[in-house]
Length: 347
Image 1 (tube, helix red, strand yellow):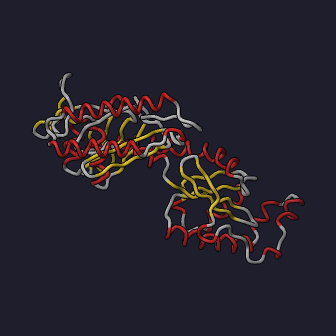
Image 2 (image 1 turned 30 degrees about the horizontal axis):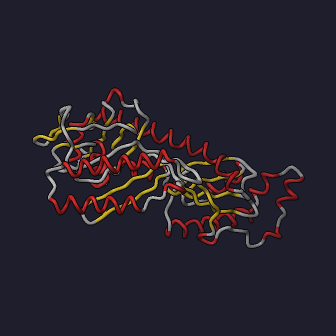
Image 3 (image 1 turned 180 degrees about the vertical axis):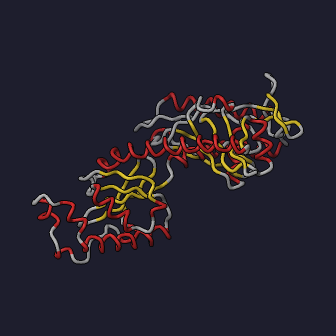
């Protein structure tokens, strides 16, 4: 269910959670495929998961409760989710996968001639980090005075100075050690000359995903750096989605493209999906018969038997990831010509 960020919880969230729990309880109690012991266990686990929820201080935008025999989980997500109750033989993990994609951690280097700072990011959240020995400063800063060189209008000479090159090689060595401990994509921020110099020196071009060529952000604060970086990150997401769509077109020309639920279900069951592209909110309830999918009857009630799949798209996402494939979510109606879901096949 979606939640509202606030200092004190609203009656709206509390009532919605109460109603969803009641619906879940009704459906579990009505599921005659469950034994009495499992039914009681799941209901108990659901109560325990709900007991961990504190809506009075909601700090995120979405809430997931998972319950199964012998276990329960409660997740708060920094992105909104639809209102849903799902009874199935697997957990509905699509929202976790999407949140992880959007909020995957990353590093930011703010480049200067006198200091290079490191920032740790996840989604829009950003904070300075001292991991890997950062911030880095030149060993012999007295050899030249960047401020003096800027005052005489010769800023580029700061970044052509041999001492600056040596300093950036030291920064790159620190980055190397950091990435071995915590590999993440990296953003570069600084004036064009600084970014250009570091890119010419670094041995980690493969992890540099984008650049923000702008000065005055090296010292932060995060509240100034994060909004400037958000525009770069949004453009990166757009570019990644366009690249995924281009790969679908290439797969179509190679005849390694699958589209539509049934075709992809067969392929993912055989472990042949290398890359899945799916619309953000696409979902279907289907019936599985002899390994193929058919639309479920209007009065079909999803159960834990696996014959009625309440969200087969979620299962396709999960199976793709389990087989080592990748998943890209795109805005709704992006794949209308491919039935809202498509895949690049391994063979």
